[in-house]
Image: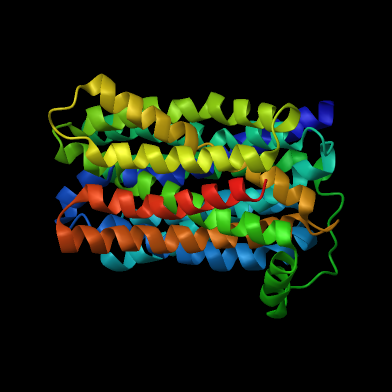
Amino acid sequence: MNQLLLALGAMFLQQTFVALGRALPAVIAPAIISDLRIDAAWVGIFFGITAAASLVAQLGCGSFIVRHGALRMSQMSLVMLAGGTALAALGTPVALVLSAIITGAGGAVSTPASSHLLSRVSSLRYMPLVFSIKQTAVPAGMLVAGAFGPLLTEWKDWRFTMLLSAAACAVFAVMLQPLRRIFDTDRDPTRTFRMSDFKATLSAVLATRDLRALSFACLAFNGMQATITAYFVVYLTTIGYTPIAAGFLFSVAVAVAVPGRIVWGWLGSSYVTPRVMMAGLALGMAVSVALLALCGPGWPTILVGLVSCALSATALSWHGILLAETARAAPEGMRGGVTGGVLSFGQVGALAMPLIYSGLLDWTGSYGIGFVVCGIPALLVGLRLLRKQ
């Protein structure tokens, strides 16, 4: 139990810092757009590049986790986030592209590594709850980004905010070092990376019906999350909110995902099958994002906040259930790699949907249309999961 708590605490903090670094560019996007005089569609392009890098990294990270250990790869994830976030502070087009690639690849390793580690110290029955608690780190990191990002940016500037986030990631990577002798005892130094690992990971995922279903669900869910993360704050500023007010509302909404993930994990461990739980979340996020699309300048803040909280409780709260089911369905010894394979489908969604949204925004000038379109895959997944009951 002590080892489980130690592992859970370490992975929770690791993913909190990673989530902070990845969410920050979206939260302070209005300041970046204004300072660099670029179009709002840049946000979708930046996160599309991030998702593309994440896809490649998640497909290929399995061998590195086995060779170096999950704890070491968690440290590498944080170091890459630190370097990529600091690079973005340069503000040049090349630096922003490189930042998206490095932070995307670095952040992508975080979840497979933590899943590999926690699956070794947790029982199968309580995996949904354990993984859900661990995944509350993502909204926790986003909450910190939303609460402090705009404030620090207004006090100093957006470059200072990015550099501060980079420093935090680097410091925590060093702090994890003493735990390596405890949690990396299963590493295999003889394991080497091969290009065929990409194909092997995909084959392992697509060969199993349960893993295929989880992969397509992950595509829809992660695409929705990426779109909301990228455009939520910018969208609110177009309907009358200041950047600080929009960031605050983002933080309040994201805070709902913290207890939400734990409650869904508890229900999925004890009372409801994970498939039913995921179906409910899929339908909930499709309805919530459609309501968000209807929000306008005349809507009371409390109503916009309630819609945002409902969206957070669904589109930002599915991870623990899906990841626990992935670890359960994965072959023994391949949980890190298979988790990366399933999440790589999620990155396809995270790559495609912000770009689709960006294209629709440029074509129609409407933020709402893009939200509705990006909710359609989640709706289809929810109906399909219910049909299989």
